[in-house]
Image (tube, rainbow, N blue to C red; front, side, top):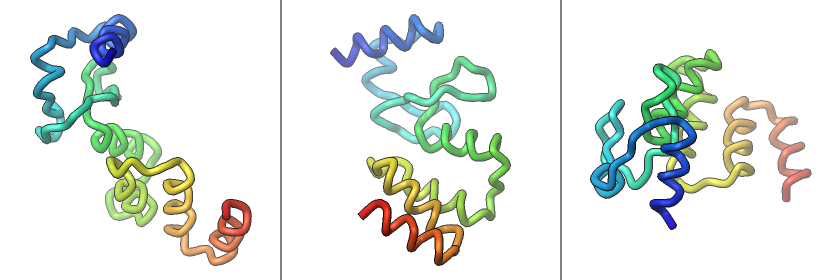
Length: 109
């Protein structure tokens, strides 16, 4: 079943993924060994990269620079298996807006 998903990805984006690559995957961008490479690099639109590198590329494209507190809170959630609600909560808390945090808590708890 897992290989079927990779075959689908291969057909969809045209990236050749061999069984060896499925077994021992390293992110070509950061070199970290990961279980899966599901993010498509924005640099060339054909290289599969790890979730964290994909998120960093997306944040760069959105204009969130290295020192941004919002960027830090988003990257802290990557790879933890966090839910969309947890990621939004982290973004809202990173703004420091007390009203926004109270509103989020009132509508999501």
